[in-house]
Amino acid sequence: MEKFSRFRDAGTGIQVFLPPVAPTGSSSPLTALLSLPLLLLAVIRGLLLIAVITLWSLFELSLGTAMRGAFLNLVLALLGIFPEKQVVSPSSRNRAAQVPLGSPKAGDLILSSHSSPLDILLLLRIFPKARVLLPVLSPSPQASPIPSGKATSTSSRSAAQRRRGPSSYLPESLRGSVEGKTDETPQTRRIEGWKVSDSIWQALKVIASCRPLELGSEGVTRADLVDLDSLKEVGSPLIVFPEVVTSNNRALLKPAAAAFPSSWADTYSSTGSLRSLKDGPTFFITTIKYEAPTPLSASPITTVPRSLPSLFFALLSSVPAYAPSIRILNPAESITGSSSSSLSDSRAGTAANALRRGIEDVVADAWSNLSRLRRTALGWTEKDAFLTMYAKR
Image (cartoon, rainbow, N blue to C red; front, side, top):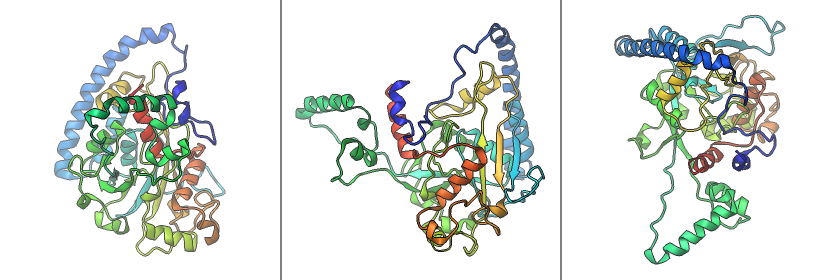
């Protein structure tokens, strides 16, 4: 899709928003031969999946999270997903040795890269007591009403914007730089805060829609937002996706600085670490890598809106042998650990360097080293503009 080339990262040339597709010409007669058996198998697996999810919902009402890990293993197995987990300890001489992960406490943060709604299921399988923090954005700007006498001129202006190219789709924060206007104050959406998801399925639905929650919509108010300086009051570990939106797993998006309180940023800029935070959280920095799709195996990567049933059906009708790779940095060697490693903070070193780098940069560097994916300068605002253009394709 050539018209989406404007959303390639300038530094790497990687397109991180378009959904992955199976290689052209990779189909074979065997693919057509197996399609019917896979469809029949999908029906059986789907019925079993509905039964397991129903039982899981009943058990959670009575037993809480006690059986969550077991039910998540069943759900993922029926979807044909068998993840491989590895805890990485860069300071260990024996890289093949098993490193104990430990259990996160209330208020600890699981900071993960983000490409699919299934990220939640994979992380909850490892951290069954965790809850999901969803970003809440400011409301979308409403189009101002058009006076009847100006309808023609407005229509002409819209046509001119389309001819100009990318600027008509970009958010206000980026449009001025594209059009060469620097004397206007940009009016852009911002991250208002983070909300603890009421349920796993609500979080899956929001992520599959590729549209984060908005303040004032779906009953979300400021009273629902979590104080990031008092995470222990939530009473559980928290899963956070600092990229805010999903990528196509070819590279990493720019994490949002709003994922971390300003008080943490001040501590990091003055000390070069977060170890001195009083009652501060421990970071479990995590990456999830998915395999590329094939004619017989769909990908759970979701970068454009889709419904959960369509995602689940695509996985149910695929060959049940999908093995995403989950890599977790040893928490003791993260930026909050007792011995910050070169993998988590390779360029911070001193407080002077920390002044030029935020916590989000340290987390992104750790992701890049864990996953061997390159960082990009694209973030959630560019993804917002991409989705606007994608909807008009």
